[in-house]
Length: 268
Length: 348
Image (cartoon, rainbow over all chains, first blue to last red; front, side, top):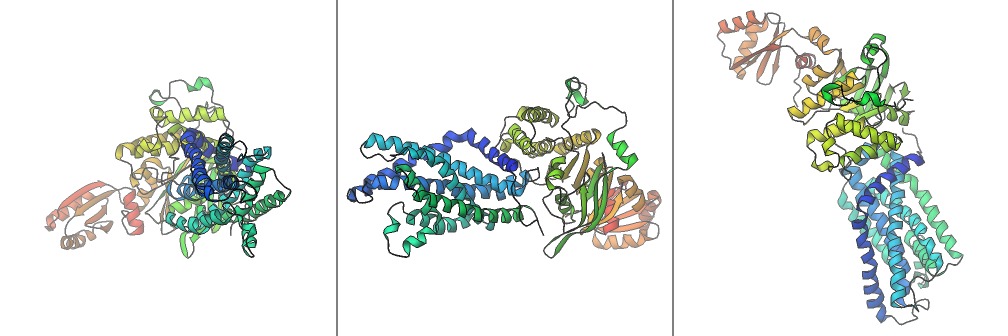
């Protein structure tokens, strides 16, 4: 009945992104602050605590904390974009009815969804940049001989986090577009986000496992995001291009689905 | 395209109603108002032909035809579930018609979704203000959705806050506003793009009488400024006060159409006697008045008797000796039209 494929307009997409940015700018200090503390906890508990039990030179010839730090950048982006596209989007959709108000203007439902993708990506990049700064500074201060970020390619990490954020926003929005009750997010976080966090090569290399573990990992999004961050933090090999291509393809293939479902929810 | 009119500085001074600045500061070149012109030329700004809307098996709107003339206030009156809100939603693009045609400002709503939305202002039934933004920010951010230049948005936001008397709340949080203030802010928000048509879905439902009067006052002012207003209501009084013409809807259909005055003249006798009493006595009373009355309706615990000569009828009731608890005599109104046409009371 509706037009089958509704491509978002760049203008409308920008307006929705701009709305979120306006609010973020009012509260950014309080929003961002926990984000600077979080990496310190992770590195203390896993890097120094757990890492003390792991022999030096255990993983790729570096310390354990060097191994996990870039992967945490990727998972940080995943969490940022996932919260944005699940709880935050749900509140705007069903509780505050923000989208109902927006779509009675020249901004259409498809623009709303695309704007939220872009915003979740932006938020992931902003969070990740803070995280990255903490890692870089902390790494050099604590052990200059084994820094956590050791390549200038790391400057490309923030734009990559934007892309990674958009990818996880598409996934989260897809789930949001299908559920009626907010408590159902427990399923998404327990069955999707947490396993990705644990089994995507952040804490141990999955590539060394026997088949089909590496093959399964290849089909999951965070695995590639972790690869990209780790490569850029330490100096990339050409293989990183394959991971980026995977992320772009997966995002593009999935992006129209939540747009379709959200449109059906917003317009009867 | 409807241009963003430049408001001449000279016309923004005092001198308009109550010393407030006029919101629409354009100088009128002719003495004829938009409303008079619309009525004279019968220039339609919104046309519905056999408009239908179904949700699954449920038919919310079952083929309605209506036309709204430029500059008039047009009302949809009816109980909940009559199809008013569905009709409104089709106008502003929140629902897609299942069948029939709907053109707004000469544009088909399904083919020119964005352009239609650019030309109308929407006051929804439920508050959907942006709670994360302050009062004035709500207007500024909303104006951006229409791609208006920043300067225009800023100026209009000021004028509109003044218009709805929320100037002193400009930097308040939305949550701190009362129900009436929120509704006024919704009205201001709907005007940020200087729309040709303003669509209001139950603009005063849930407001206390004072807040309601303030909203009515503002809406009348908008109508006088030449805006086309389309509103739904289930308050007869509201329809009678605001609407130039209205339709009464029930069960997804339009039951009748006309000006409030004409509807009353056409469908009911000028005078009404309302008798309140116990079941048994009302039955007896019904028999007594049946011959003389033009019509008799039973509504809950009261009997409504329509007559041209109420005095004679009242005298007859007195002489009959039937026990009546309470008698009210009044002029017939829209509520009576509704009751006559649908055989049911509008309270739900």
